[in-house]
Image (cartoon, rainbow, N blue to C red; front, top):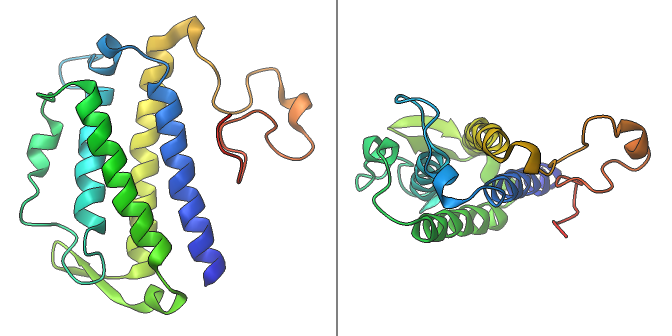
Length: 182
């Protein structure tokens, strides 16, 4: 079970790294841009994930993951704050999340936590959260890649470069197992 805890921390770290690297490739205009009136901007997705992670992982083992102070619907409204403030909230939510997950012990994985009064084993709640994060991170990556166009720097193996990366996994990619961004 310690292997699982190590891996889930790595999974969360990898997802944050991907998102950070993606939105670092777009300017403020694209960060807030909608591809259509009903779409979410990168900024809205960042705002939503920050709210979700903060709610889920604050007092993770002792209180419902849907905090009464959270207003989920407002997370999908155009942010009324600058990019820097959104990124501060994003980084703070990730700090809470990663500190909480790193503090878990193998025995905690069988404990029960609640999300909207529904019971989950900690292991289930972590997998649910990791899946939710991955879903939104790939939305961020897709939007950032679209907006960056030819300026985009691949976050993994670029097209046509697979042969250069056959041995030892990703040499240059963002997700290199345990390798942080350069």
